[in-house]
Image (tube, rainbow, N blue to C red; front, top):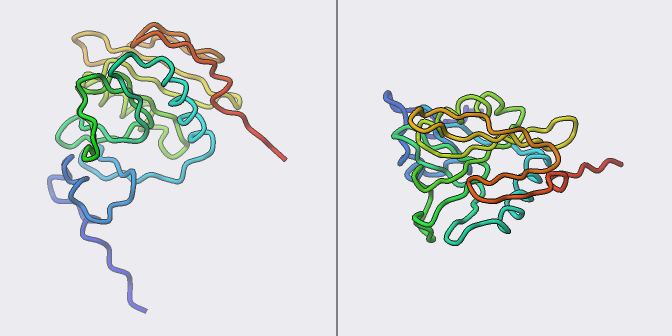
Length: 195
């Protein structure tokens, strides 16, 4: 038996990968992110993650201002070696949206949302918010499962600092006025069923 050879993209260039590489590398696994010049591969998602994002996306549609779009699992180019894939983003009216778009620019993004998974806790809680803030994304939400229920942690960019300020912790209801008026019943984002 001969060992399987690894694809060429398994060996990063000495200076690391750049954002455009995600569009050029053949047979790259779906939902691969680029963080700090390194490829990050998606793990299988748990039902809580999928349910929270899908239902939040549907709920946000009712509150979208004209020209804004809510988008699931598309990458955002933040910098030369930073192209993460938030679980959900809201893009503004200047974003280019067509069949050829493979990522959005940081300037297009009004809100980035991450649902924390066991395999991505440090990235979702620490590294990605730092990258989003540095790129100027004005609003960031982190969703965590607490006592079996979704909880939304809201953050807002502090002008001129490239850092986020906490804007509240929402347990059963998410009611905010920024980035626009939103009022969502969070108890509908996830409903566990057992046998």
